[in-house]
Length: 264
Image (cartoon, rainbow, N blue to C red; front, side):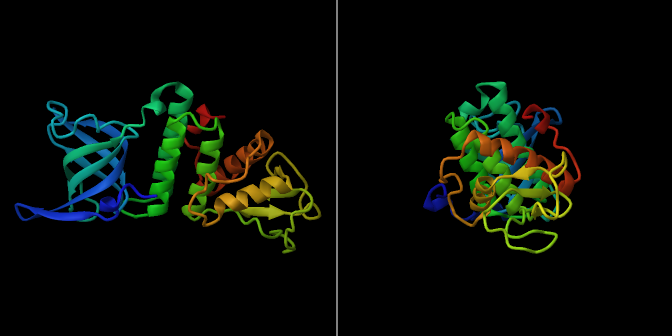
């Protein structure tokens, strides 16, 4: 569910003939910028991934009380400049700081991985409301102590699908035979899909997937609005999904995420 009816759309207002937007945003990264400013990378519900300058934020945080920190969900007010330009951030109002994300290194690493994967999958100024909601809900559950490795695993499967890298789980990518949920399937990274045992043996780079794992991944990749409201996922299934997604991610994105080493 979105964060309140009033936050469904980017509300516009004019200040000194300048068009401004107030939109829910997740703070992704913060960098010092000049003597007193902050460079803020943020992911918005309405405009996608943006970056902007918070003038004087390091000297006085009156306009940004407790909201310019990694992972925070805020109502951010910023101007609308041309594509590719830095936006000027006027103010922010904290919605949720997700303090539980900072309680230990493992949880912090999981949240950082989610941010990094979002940055890789979604270019600047490409809105995706489903991805925004996925990131927000993942942070909420993780901050509340949810699920060990379950939350980042579900997040990665769903995020890759939303980013255009869903895994074909319907049929053998070699012979084309429909997978009916009987017997082991074999994941082939180069094809981005599964193969039957007649066409592909299990190897270090073509890992096996049980019928239960294939079904759970189908459910996660589906268009269901609440991807976390799924049947109980066993540790065995999680242990099968993790190497599949590692192979899939590194092959199709062409890089190893910096934060993934802390999770493996």
